[in-house]
Length: 367
Image 1 (cartoon, one colour):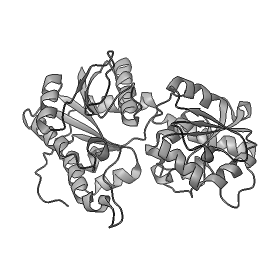
Image 2 (image 1 turned 135 degrees about the horizontal axis):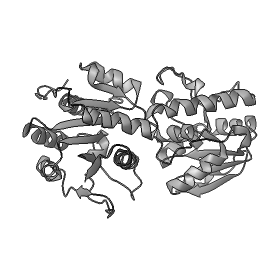
Image 3 (image 1 turned 30 degrees about the vertical axis):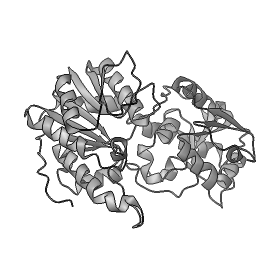
Image 4 (image 1 turned 120 degrees about the vertical axis):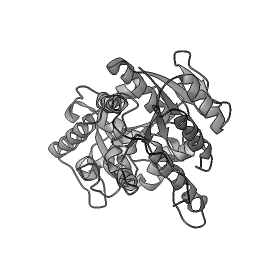
């Protein structure tokens, strides 16, 4: 069986959606004999000869429809983040292309992975004014989908307000840098703290949680920070309470090995959205101790975030070894419930299940 996945980029480009789509595609092939063809929407992607992919020349409904017709698959897996498909987050061309493709044959099905929904913001920002259009596109894609996967309980609840909650599955993201089958105990690890992720995420960590990073290093007896990712201004990684080794961008297999060795990983990310964070997924997947300075929230599918992380605040003075190991074990167990094998299995089940009735979007006013 063959499906078509729509995604902005794929490896070798460094792209969270692309990494996710490619890893899921590889697991679907190995575990379920489901082949993936890819439609790449960014014209600057440099292809990989081992990947069956069609790169769009332009962002038009006609171009997308043609690419999907040529893929000769009746099932599309769309990885959706509005800003990944349009500069202002309003990819009407994507919505119209999907409508055209689906309308031509009632046997065709769309499964959408909503990694994000729509933006919002203050009245002086563009997100405020464009939010109604983004919401219309998101709602329409949801209506076109036979099933919707989403990464967080927050997004699941928002989608549910549009009805058809039976076709929504909340499934946190996987680690894009590998998983540990038997992670070492914290007592066997090196006293290293990893700060990992995109440039903006790490900028926020060092600028907004700098005191907490220093405090975490004292509490956990950290002797070195390993900074992994795109280069940052030197002043951000200098002057911390322990040396910071700037490792730069690294291949996934190297990051995997470092995360097997390090004691903890720092994350500056809203706790309610950790389930969509590849950073948090990577820390959990390797049995590390996740560390944050942000207050706890109880919306990680039955867990409060302070059950899955060490929360550093002004009152934090110490953490016992047993408590730290308990948090790391809980975070690892939480991740194993949706690891790559489990996630691919759920998606394969949706691909095989033709019982959900597609509800064609009728358009209409933006709401």
